[in-house]
Amino acid sequence: MKATVYHVVNYHEFLQKGGTFNAEVADGMELEAVAEVEINPFENDPEAILNQVYKDTNHIDCPWWENDGVKALRGDARSTSIGDVIEVEGFSPYPSFHRVAPFGFDRLPIRGREQLNIR
Image (cartoon, rainbow, N blue to C red; front, side, top):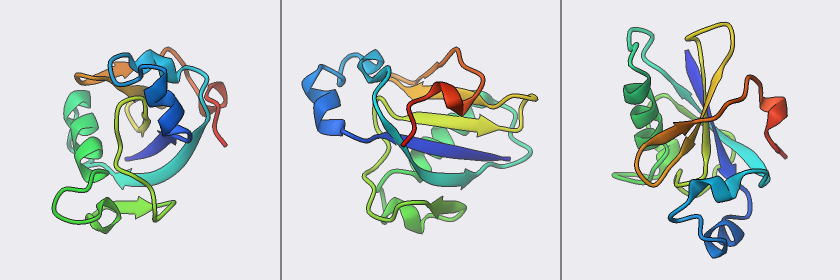
């Protein structure tokens, strides 16, 4: 199983629109795939998976692209933050999409990436 992480392209604009307190400001904003993260195939708790992907794509002890199981699609990307989207594959026939919220994650009511504004 894997997760793909998409970052809001114009994060400065997202913050200016109040995105720090309202992740929905990111609706319709352009996204860019920045990472693929391997997921433990024995993990079946969606919240634990999202937390792992979030942690693995943040600069904590090293640049996030140096973390085990992470494949950077863009090496100079910032850490994953509010408004960014995580796509999780492997739980059902369709991937699930989750937006990083001020506290936790919000599941997006979509079935495919074509419903996102991906660059």
